[in-house]
Amino acid sequence: QTKYWVVDGKEPDPGIIRQAGEIIRNGGLVAFPTETVYGLGASALDDNAVEGIFRAKGRPQDNPLIVHVADMDRVWELVSGVPARAAGLMEKFWPGPLTVILRDGGVAAKKVTAGLDTLALRMPDHPVALALIRAAGVPVAAPSANLSGRPSPTTAEHVRNDLSGRLDAILDGGPAGLGVESTVVDLSGETPVLLRPGGITPGQIESVTGRILLDPSLEPGAVIPGKPRSPGMKYRHYAPAAPLVLVEGTPSRVTGIVRQMLEENLLRGKRVGVLCREENAGLYPGAAVVGAGAGGEPGETASKLYAALRRLDQLGVDLILAEGVEPRGVGLAVANRLRRAAGKIINTGQLHE
Ligand code: TXA
Ligand code: MG
Image (tube, rainbow, N blue to C red; front, side, top):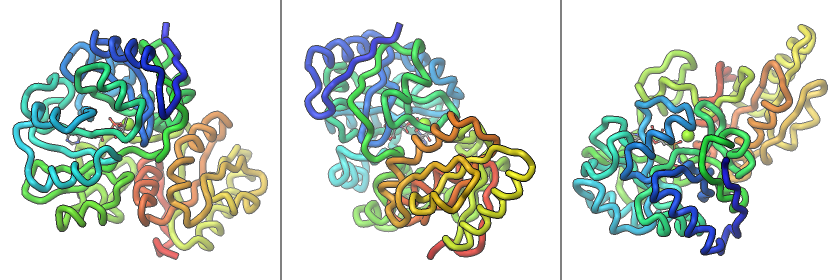
């Protein structure tokens, strides 16, 4: 039986937070809101509890988890060292949507790191998340609170749909703000490496650390669906149930190609969903159209993306056609998630308007 607690997103009821913290301290699982997406939390010091996260999500054992902390002192207890550039980043962007990868200190449960010698850490910028971590009294390992392979949850309702009965409690603190996951930067080596784009942009990171490298999987053209190049890319992420074809490029050419593919598939009797900028909703007659933000508003698209993918699932379409998003600002993260959700990417030539 999963408890469902509605709390104020800014000032959560201390009694509820205390109970939720106790569940985590005692080895249970609690879903909670963060400023990015909802997380599925367990004590990062307890291997059995962490094992429970993998079981509840159906997550592959070799995909490591992020450890969430509510104060900076915890970091030094969990890692073997904090390079100056890492300290600078944490100072500047914590609490916030930035995850740093440092050398593991061997204190966190083995399952958290999935056998790696590094540890991912983040301080979320959300009153409910911070209060919960403090109440738990332990660092909290938390992946996104979705079934593995499904879009990340941006509301408690999404969590309930995916995981009800598989966890002890859900804290409903309203919709997550940003809508895509944190930026992940590997600081365990000489040069910082961006592993996952998110709410903090590469430019913001470089303003603190100097030049960062992109993980090879993020280089333009590197994402080839079905043909992963690096271990981290071997799972298809953020995937809706129906196959998704992503059409990237100049907006006018994108809409032209989506219209053409729509017509072809409607003629073949398929039910087609289209994911598009809201102002384009009228361009696709015959499709189940789901808008996700206005064009040129990547923040709005980010906050609506995962709910839109879930909506398309509910509509029970056979195929989803998605307009690409310009990879600028947080749009880089949105474009990355769309690419990872796609079974096929069509590039019409130009990425920018
Ligand atoms: O915004 C977020 O980061 C959310 C909220 C809940 O905090 N969490 C989240 O967790 O997105 P998850 O598990 O869905 O994604 C964690 C990512 C995965 O891509 C994982 O492979 C990577 O971080 N990761 C974790 N530890 C790592 C490590 N030691 N080295 C490299 N990548 C790591
Ligand atoms: Mg996830």
